[in-house]
View 1: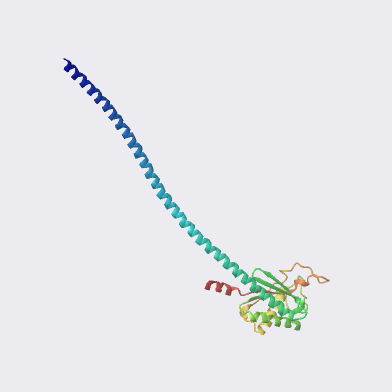
View 2: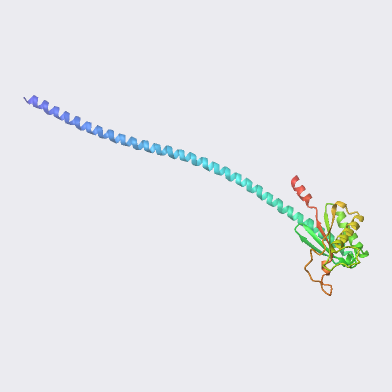
Length: 253
């Protein structure tokens, strides 16, 4: 009887232990499953991070390449600006050289009352008509020939230079017995005669152009004395120095 009771007690203990172990095992399984889920989640996040890292590295590499290209373009642009500044200085030096030659040419002639102005790449040399012509006349006087002869040396020395010779008059009507119709005719005749004389001094024809402007472009300056429009009656030389050689030199570099 005692043996039977002991056996039943032992069986109960074993069954209880088995039940406890089963619950613990299930709990451990659940814990393990949860841990596995957490591990899988972290692995997924790690994969995402690695993918993001790779994309970020690609973006950084692309940006570095673009920065390098931008630096190259910036350097190229800076070199172009530097070259343009250099060419501009050379152009200004060339124009100043021509101005100096013109002043030197006129300094050798007495009474050469001239005006030299620079506008952009052009020089405007203005001579009052009274120096070149008698009032109402289209024939060059001796003093005018002397002045033009001196000026022609500047033109022949700079064969690439272009010169427009403009004749200007005031609004005073020409006399009825004058050998020309009006001020346009007179201003054109005077410009043509200046060009003809320069051609005699061996200035190349392709350098010269004559134009009569009549009274269309007054100076806007009132002269001293009784003859208020004296400065409107003038011969202007619009000089374009040859700066093309500067651009050619730049292209060869």
